Image (cartoon, rainbow, N blue to C red; front, side, top):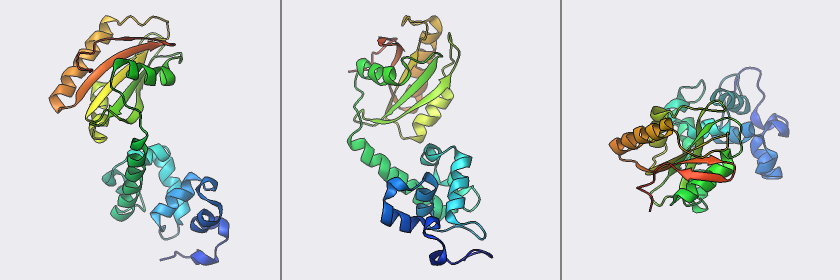
Amino acid sequence: MIGPGLPPLMSRPVRDRPRERLASLGPAALSDAELVAILLGSGTRGRPATELAAVLLAELGGVAGIANADVDELARHSGIGAAKASTLVAAFALSSRISLVHAPVVASSADIAAAAISRIGSVRTEHVLLLILDAAHRLRKSAIVATGSAISCMVPVREILALALRHDAVAIALAHNHPGGTVIPSTEDREATQRLRRATREVGIRFLDHVIVSGDDWASITAPDVK
């Protein structure tokens, strides 16, 4: 139902009709809010779909936030019921499956290092990078799970497990950078690796390795599970 003061959909200017803009201009011409609005299909009383989409994007931190949310989390937002939430989750799941066709395979410590060097090898503060893999060791998702100072960063084991389970990880790998130039693991690095290895074993996720990178250099902390 169209709320008071809102003209019928087809009487609105084309700029306010994302479906027509998609058909005539293609998806590249549309904003994130317009593309999400098409998936939502309709708005609520007094709030068109484009506005509802813009609010949802702002509340969840952009497209990545929507992609990472589940049905229950999306449905808790105003104007997003179970049906709209399910449509969004299904659309992003299909996109993820398509991307897996071309996803890189992470099967060795060198593969982990290559992924990490391109992402965090040259940053000036320590970052912890999580790689989430499927049964074929294809990269499903990579995410920065912690940031720190120029000399240290905590490894958030609980957050890593939560994210891995949320994305149906079969295996994971971890990497962090040493901005100071050395790739020699510290005692804390080794202890964090052992905590994560024990935690992943308990939940049935394979832990490949924890790699340290600095510039183009890298070193494996321990990689007994990598084949």
